[in-house]
Length: 274
Ligand SMILES: NC(=O)c1ccc[n+]([C@@H]2O[C@H](COP(=O)([O-])OP(=O)(O)OC[C@H]3O[C@@H](n4cnc5c(N)ncnc54)[C@H](OP(=O)(O)O)[C@@H]3O)[C@@H](O)[C@H]2O)c1
Image 1 (tube, rainbow, N blue to C red):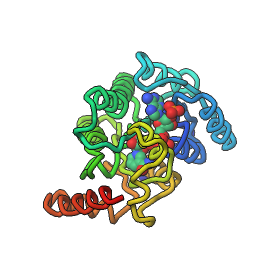
Image 2 (image 1 turned 120 degrees about the vertical axis):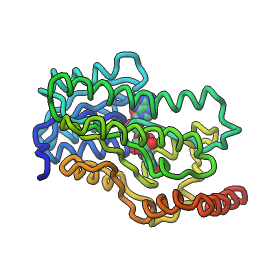
Image 3 (image 1 turned 45 degrees about the vertical axis):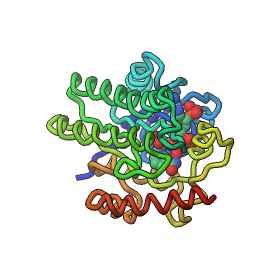
Image 4 (image 1 turned 90 degrees about the horizontal axis):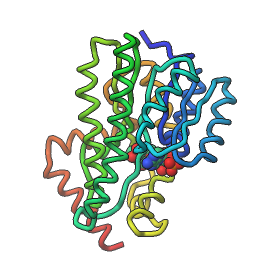
């Protein structure tokens, strides 16, 4: 039986652009009131306008996901302004395009703070509230296909995404008897501001190496991920994938690390000759 999600609220972090913005709008189409979070208030207000066109309420919580107390503010906004907490899509995150040896430890820690620890804190606190109230719910984290394998220059980023994936799998089993679903979302290359941001953080200005090297047929639109997230809210499953090809590659890379090594070396050659 599909779950009824109409009228049930969702918190979306990283809702000012890309996958988060598209998911907030798709959730609104399904009748879900949305708490929107990110740091850029002007962009959040634009997304809120689009969400409200579908006849649902929004609440905006501006701030960095690593700010002290922000998880509580997000959960309070869902409960007080939107009438109750049901789902969380912990999506705020960023990447970099740097070899591990060129990444400073403070950069590694900063990325884990946003991509992993802030994500953990939000779903952790949401789960505690749902358990205390004996309410059903659904907690989702935006991980990546790179949770299952990695690529040169994406080692630190993929480590943050693998950490999210493992956490979701464990929490899913731990909360199974409480009607609280936990899912991880594994997008492939998605055309968002992500690559511009990661190039900037890696000291390359706006030029990203990634989009140039990924075959066009593997680049998806954020709306595709958003639809898959809403489908998962209706019919919960452990993991959300939008590319069967990449999922198959991930499985093969697990079975044969040698295969992954060959692909990665080819990738390195392309990047070095660019
Ligand atoms: N694009 C891809 O190819 C791809 C593939 C796999 C997984 N993902 C994952 O998808 C998620 C969304 O990325 P995207 O592709 O949609 O990129 P995006 O367009 O750059 O969106 C990232 C969002 O996160 C927010 N954000 C970043 N750092 C934040 C912080 N410290 N506190 C609060 N909000 C923060 C940004 O908003 P503000 O700047 O306004 O704060 C923005 O709304 C990320 O977790 C990413 O790892 C992306």
